[in-house]
Image 1: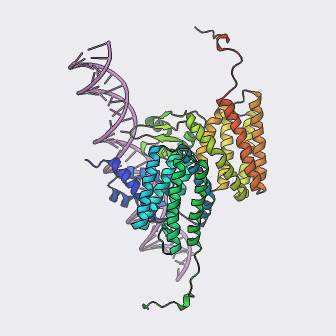
Image 2 (image 1 turned 180 degrees about the horizontal axis):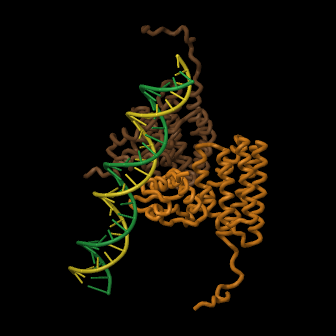
Image 3 (image 1 turned 90 degrees about the vertical axis):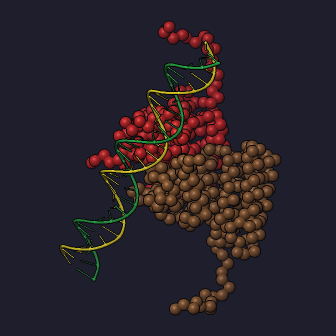
Length: 236
Length: 236
DNA sequence: AAAATACATATTGCATACAAATTGTAAATC
DNA sequence: GATTTACAATTTGTATGCAATATGTATTTT
């Protein structure tokens, strides 16, 4: 089959989304048009359309007469994130419980299976993307065109932040990640039962867990040893 | 000064936004590239970028290999609107009260002056746009990048719906519009005082008023006269 | 006459050439 | 020697010509 340009566009779109969600492309990173043309085999016109689409979704920022760069994340945006996330997540899961179709529920179960698989033997990237996919589907279930733009914007940064803690270095983190998986199961059950109130409660619980994970990364426990007493490197 | 192409682009962007908000361009209306090129003096490449930007903001929808059209509004979207609006409006005003700068407060007061002016002697379009501007500023005050996408999306359709009732045909509507103006004043006061709780309460009040206006349009009182007995037009 | 198909027309999408703007560098001036 | 200014090189933005896709019409076929 001929590799049509429409395919190349969606391919690049997906590739860039993934790269940004996983921090392969870091916040603030510059995107070079020439380079991307090379990689994707697209000419500049369709490439720039892809960048504009990503800008509309909040993945990148376009500066006039200067290139595109990956959306920044700062302490300010993190604060905004903490304020907005619980409200929006709650509303989305509430609506998901009300509106989910059986096909969507099947898709959610499949996504959860992928997530569990990623926890068992996947990379940090796999886990983040699988978790992202799970929540994307809850957004589709809610299907409220007015809430989805903000929900998607939140999911982007949730994924990027997650990349720091879905790598369970401590036993507590490994445990909280497995607890997240159990919450996913409960969420599926609530949605399948059409139980709006339970879904909203689970959203809150799930968010609280997530917040704790984020906080324990932003404010980690201090080191046991004062820095001065650490073993020295052998180099000059 | 030379009419640079960047100006032409922002001009067209504003013009299209306004036309869509005021329903000059109806939901579902097709946008002809050739026509828009003619009007704006832009060539197709930058024109299409404008359309993509509008799509990202939710003003238009792009269909592959078929033209752009103004975003639809249906009974489904109206239902979504009713569900999402109170929550988001409340959050925005709450944050506005917390974060507004004095420059922004000055801008809000100016916008309210414009709004009052539009109520006194402006057209329906003037009123809708002035009201839209007022609420846009509250969004800037809140300044939460995660909430703004949904807030903007809501404002678009709020304006389009408003176009039907900011034309006070009945005395009750004239009264409720003037009540809306008084609520704007109260909102300004709450923001200036940094009173978060009051701002949230006012958001709820303001929304309830708005909802009543919408409902009385969607479900108007029946006509007093049966249709058959109305005076006939003089034409054949 | 109704349906289907082939063709003409119009519209959308892409590639490339060109113009404008920004950035980095080197020379000139103070 | 530090700052400014002119210039070159790179990068972004625009225009236009061509290709591909969709749509409407007329002709053919049953």
